[in-house]
Amino acid sequence: MNIILLGPPGAGKGTQAARLVATRGMVQLSTGDMLRAAVKAGTPVGLQAKAVMDAGALVSDEIVSALIGERLDSGEAARGAIFDGFPRNAPQVAALDRLLAARGVSLDRVVELAVDEAALTERIVGRFTCASCGEGYHDRFKPTAVAGTCDVCGGHQFKRRPDDNAETVAARMAVYRGETAPILPLYEARGIVRRVDGMADMDEVAAQVAAALDEPVAA
Ligand code: AMP
Image 1: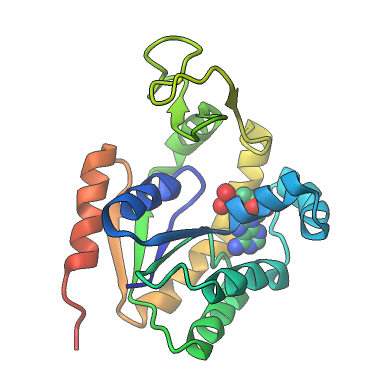
Image 2 (image 1 turned 180 degrees about the vertical axis):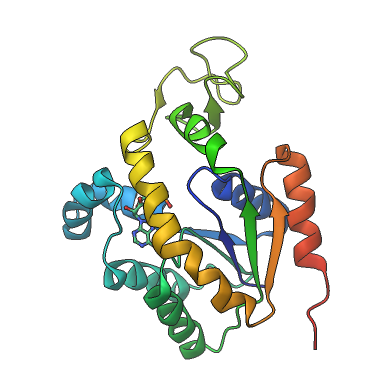
């Protein structure tokens, strides 16, 4: 099963994707993660993407589509792919259709994480991860049990995304409203969108996502 997790920044796409990876053996294909890895490695793509990401704007459709194509070709998504942060505009919807059709693969569900936008900035600017194991935390909603120590691996180094500041978040929200939200009707017309309550607690959201995926596909 191949799915898209769709929702604004901070809606919980990454958190829910990680759950599906753990429970269903699917792979998370996050263009944001791929771009951050490219920036860190200093590749030509990373050098091109960094300033765009820091501004909260969209990296070119060609770059992100190529990244997704490479990952689809690696064979890792045999048990299903979770597209996280892609597609983000109408041209990327068309690009994903082409990438999947060329490989004889279907798109089964688009799970929309419906959230109250007013709450998102606080969710985003407070988030941080363990630099060693990647466990996600939040200053207010999920602090470490012992200050400065990762609950999972005991690490002491943490990191925050450079684009998780109030100014860039405002730009990212505007891009979501202007370019990404309008792709929902394209998928609604195909009858594959399922909406879940992204404001519920993480376990409840996970249960709703699971129900959305397990519902039989209409003939
Ligand atoms: P994310 O981790 O999904 O929040 O993405 C972080 C940043 O990476 C975005 O603000 C964009 O600058 C860039 N990015 C990620 N995915 C895409 C995409 N599908 N198209 C264009 N830019 C993207």
